[in-house]
Length: 330
Image (cartoon, rainbow, N blue to C red; front, side, top):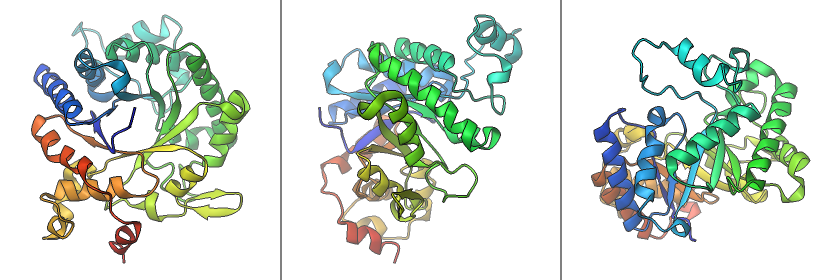
């Protein structure tokens, strides 16, 4: 299966039946337009985004689409019992069954313990209606880095990766990765920096040379170009950008925030889209991100059919030349 250069994201939107139906329709329209990549997370819209995609997937041949999801944040669904508060809900769902204790949480909302990852993966598989998921990300693992310190953090990552290798062996996922926000964008020495070489070493230590740590996800857009421009990673003594480092390591890349939740569109100069031969600012922003060397799929939230119709047209275009991309930044 060929992965589309754009992927449908599911982060934004209200937790409502109408939004669910809109996402399901948008996913179906995107698939018919040639889109094959769909991205979600356990905590997106309290789990409703996974279920909305699952409703669409019922009509898709399984071998014709790729889905990634994430676990790390504790999803807070709409309470069935209005008298049940968050603490009682946590005890009923996690603490009582022995899945998580309050001591496992970082910042009161984030956990990457093997038992929790296994629990959440099974919830996601059920919501998506799929026996095997293509990609399972650890969601913003850098949130735990400051809390744990580097040595304890990478030891925790090793245990999480070991669990993910077990999920692969059990047929529950095909590959795993890390979906980040600041981790790969900030330079070494800055709070939250993730060292790709140490992540790969952790994967190799638990999975051998044939480990299944195959993907990373990070933001990339015209206002946040660090993945394309900033040498934040060091491999064998050579500083390089996150995209170049991923290419050197044989990793595939999903980019998030490709239009920065539409905020980037208001910052583009007049005539920018037309100068690239495109009709709308959204198309121009997506064309930049999908064209950066090393990007496998640029993700963009598309919860409405109208957004799909506008954005999917970019997939048929040739990508921009790397020199032209660099010229945008002088």
